[in-house]
Length: 400
View 1: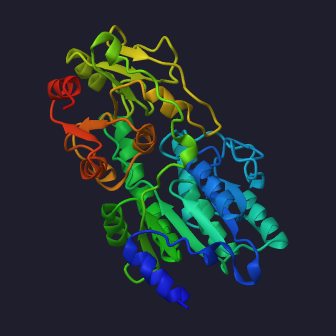
View 2: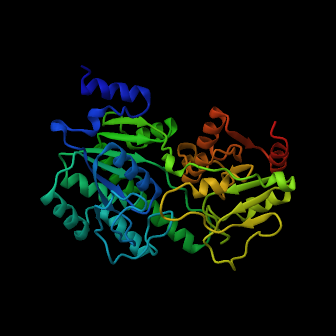
View 3: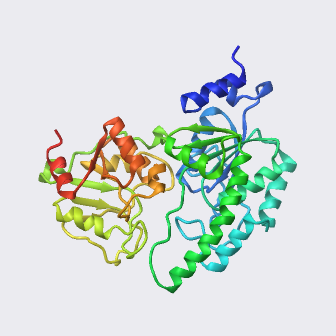
């Protein structure tokens, strides 16, 4: 019989988890008991909940979304054991995990220096008094880091797994004295966060990375060579997100190329989701761009005959609606408001890219900006990296 050590070694060499049946049934035939640490509204938590359900695991979810309190995971009826330590917290800045003010961000940073949140400690100690866990699984981000550090203190007899989704943060761009103050503060805050990440990651038995580039970066950045096991595994979405039916192509009707952008979009003038410039360049090349935006309809954007906003498709419950909607387009386009390559996009596969994979339509993206996505697209021959919008328009017009 193969030993557990041999299974671990084989799993590491293969670059993914070995779902040996014994993994989901600890000694005595009892189901695996999992504490999942992460934001309950995240699609990544939904995917994990569906996986736990398939494995027959008993999962408890520690909600790290400080501005949301829920009683279950949307779309997963079995995922009702949710712990909400925070009920009166102000929302955090979307996409950063940091507070909406310098003071709030400073408090968050202080958590990594030893200032404990009594609400979080109390919630974990209450859990400890009633149950034990075989596995604690965390997902990337702040304040997940804070919660994982606390969980490692309280459940130090459980195996620790951390899913590294995105790293590192994008640098703050811009000029002016306010931006200068934030840059100075963030430089100091990052020193505290980096030390906290190193402590947490070194205590993890397994770290899951979405790419070999991410694995190399994390091991180098946090000096993890002698600590735990690193696994490389792309987080593909559950089949529940796949299209059941496919729509007729819009281009068959008007003989013009149509692409869909499945990520967040705004026209605020700043931030990585401000896509006014990229959309305008696509429109100028004769490509119809379809996008969703939760911004106010009055927000000024490059809308017109080529840039067309569509309402949000689907909802909080996972399902095929978004993928089915996307099948009417010639390609899904991956865009962020960046003009050069960043380590984050060399390492990670963004969620909008993972959503695009569920659609079954080609994926297109600018050449040289999002290297992890580009390498995946080219290796599997599922789209192209274009050098100019004119080249993309020609390729969409003549797919052969």
